Length: 258
Image (cartoon, helix red, strand yellow):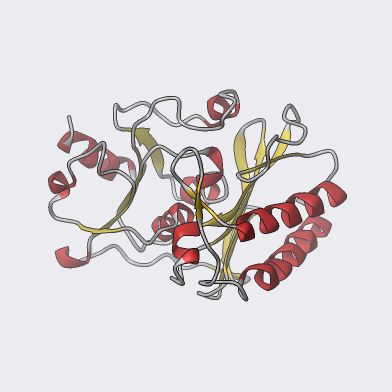
């Protein structure tokens, strides 16, 4: 990606903070038809990011959670935006929420940008490097004490008996993208997300795949973003959870539910 695009992302992230921080914890949330949560700030943030990307990269497609229709849906290069991942936390004044911007080429993740304003954390994956606030991320050591072994979960109780995950602490911080970046830098052993959409994954997948991690649905089949792009609603066609992590850890989880 050109330095001009990097400057563009930096500008978007700076302006994003100004849009979202003042109303944090004071907006009223509404329920969307799929049962997820939305606020007016989700929509304002989406409009800003989409319009800015259209202005500076008019030849790239854009898919945003809060846009009625994608822009240039057949373009080889696609921006995928989650304008406010963790809306429920945002609306209640909790701190783990933020912006995800992923860049796909023919459906495959190339770059990712994540901004979590309250936490003061900005992640970028580009040119094969994982950056936190502009510096290379040093992965944390593997857990050596059993009580510190974590799996991050999101909306899986309908599909899985979480008691079978004995031996792990289970956490739901409210943002799937934050769970994924936590996995990529070594804060947990795996993540499990319930059925979700391409914008819940695209911005963070480059970080996880750079670590050699894999994604498997509960029936063992792999994730395919190109397939999600062709579904029309950009969601899981197979309504089942997705496990992401090192291959041996993913197999460990799958065996428990076989």
